[in-house]
Amino acid sequence: MTETQQAAPAPEQPPKDLIGFLDFYLVKKAPFQLPDAWKEAIVQWGPWIMVVLLVLTLPLLLALLGLGAVFSPFGGVAAVSGFGIIAIGTIVQVGLSIASLPGLFNRKMAGWTMAFYARIAGLLTSLLSLNILGGLVSALIGLYILFQIRSKYTP
Image (cartoon, rainbow, N blue to C red):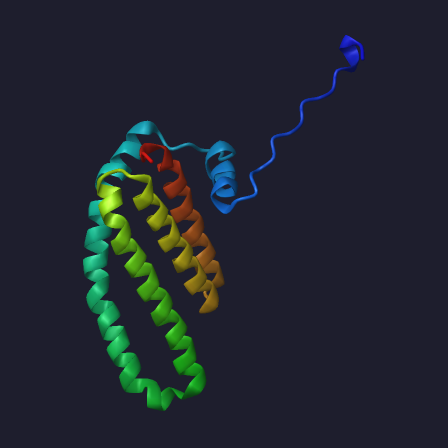
């Protein structure tokens, strides 16, 4: 090959794993990167905001479970099964969020990973309860922020 016939560089391909794929599109190829000061603020205050939201969510979740048990005889099989999907998904998401807190406070990658799984559980719950648009928009925003701050956590 002559100098004028050099091969063009191969375009960068996204990784095959889910975290690598999302990192590729939400960080490397994202049109807007969060400023470093914003990332630091999110990492510093994010776990505290999550604690407040979990405390506010817990009574609502308990009430939802109680009301679901009371009204299940009147809703029929379809209503109970749909309610069960939402309830189980929400419990899993809240559980994963609680499990992520120690790691998030200590800036460990294990905490970030649990927060990632909680976000995925929320997406699946939304999709299974047929809240497709809301679930996708919420997941996109949440995952974008989560992947933008990923570099602030240590293994």
